[in-house]
Length: 160
Image (tube, rainbow, N blue to C red; front, side):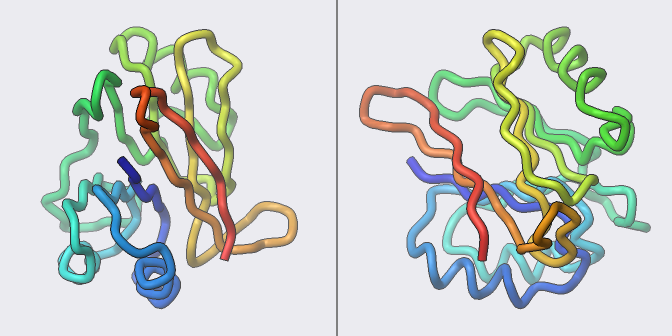
């Protein structure tokens, strides 16, 4: 199973469309918020289910603030992160994830990619931004979540 994780596209979707062509078939796409009204366009371009949450710039949107669901044996929590103080670090977010009993928390907001495995039994992933990256080098980034044939979960940060 191959799942694309993106965030903070901010209605600048060219890199998203290029990425879909480049990656080929996917089983799911998860968008961690700030699509700014282009969620229908993003969903129409995908050949798989798209799960998307509300970001701090998604004004007047009916998107859910957070989502929880299973991928295989793993419990996933998706949130934009702005309500969990991720601009100050992800410790508060990880504490919330532990309370929720999830295995993986996916978030955005900072526009900086990270895979944090420092908390036993929990993975915190921010795919960065395809449109307005803020990390050193400022390359548009995304994450891939893959479940291998043994049912194990793997994450990769990649760049355009």
